[in-house]
Length: 281
Image 1 (cartoon, rainbow, N blue to C red):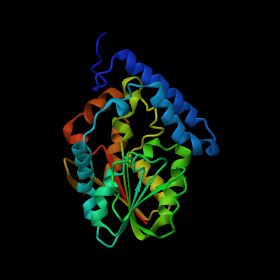
Image 2: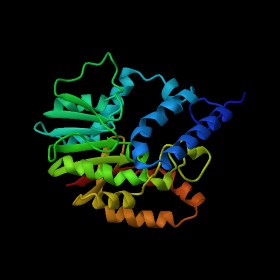
Image 3: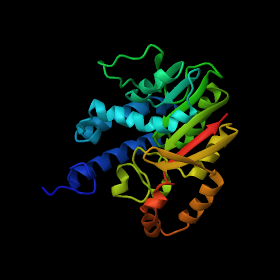
């Protein structure tokens, strides 16, 4: 069987399409569910995906401890400018908690929040670390107790009807002047889930992808007083005014998709595409 070159993970065209059809089916189930149903579905749809797609990259990819630590170090390059020893840190959608473990020596307390625990049984959590399981909505922490919150590749996986509520909960636990650093892919050079090989819009588990303007507006609706943006690559980041990015996005969004795709594949433009928002309470 001919191997597929689009996926970049060695799967055939048939295997890739099978993944797409299963994930799109499960994503539609999540999109059409009620709020109460989604409280349980966020976890179960992923379990079902991995059972029905045994060649999913998350199951077949071999990731070394060194690679995991390198990825955490890459995220820290942006976060360090916001960290201080007396802070309380919250990671939303912490996954294997590698980043939370890396942040722990730099702050007073670390909370890692996720819908399930993916910490390796061989890992020894730092003494100032605590894992909190949640339903995707409510964060079981006191109001005004967190100095810095962070998420990476989480917002796009949240149902659009739930995103505002989740952000309001982050806002609630942040102390006055506290900040939320949110990283999420940009809709204008997407889609970024499995549907990128088949459709022009995200139809897999990226339930909604955003632009800087859309994400910034959502944060303001959740109660944050202001937002700022950071752009860059390879650990070098610089602050960019959100209104400037919104203006550029308006121009890009007005272009025919093939032309927009060409522009967003340009290295200079790609520096500005991933959304890195810092929202202040």
